[in-house]
Length: 316
Image 1 (cartoon, rainbow, N blue to C red):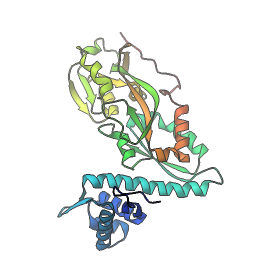
Image 2: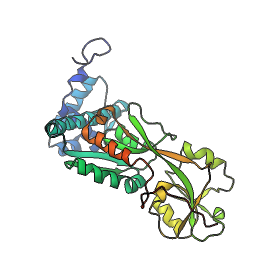
Image 3: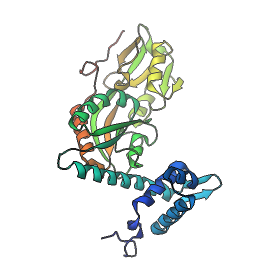
Image 4: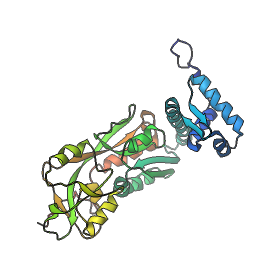
């Protein structure tokens, strides 16, 4: 039975067709009706008609039209995110139905992850996943964990599951499921052999901020303001290895660090961040995502090259 509108009647939005949803997604991605029409192989008038039909059924304006194209309104941003997720569920429906008899599934699995998780956590997980489900094609997007981060990619329908930092200053978007994997402690990285690492200039990166570090950071009188900032933790660690300063970084970022780097334990009061995953309730029931989470949980600890828990070392 179609969903009810506030007046008790069937909601016309329930009659939106997949082709109309594809038009909404295309207009958002292309930034205009003409470009979306070219992308979809339709005429500009057909795209315009489909958008007007969607707006009529939903009852709100979805795009602001102007000389510079079409931009989604706040209602349009929400509608497009739902459209992406609905279209993805339709794809999943077909893939799971076709593979039901064999207990398998084929098709893409879209994963959003921040750099260090993609580099040091995902390879082993994906290797096991593709053995269990050889028809699954992992698609990994590297997303900076700033603002809405990987969870935002899932909420917006661009990813099926995300590897995220949990419990930080940015709340997980409403309606998503999350699960904790492991705790990632911070340590001090400095040029190997330096006798007074805490007197070095501080090098930092944009993602290295959150409620899990802010209180600790403000209590450390020895920590100066950053003199150099970068957008990538691997760049920061390369600078440290070259003797340009020190950095406070999570252990996951320190895995595979360049030669010339020493690590000092920051003690029991050191900051920690929680690494976990986020997905939607609907995708959590899909075979590919369920299997991915199972394999992720089987390696639910901070990985190292040797397979052991890392131990901070001190040259002092």
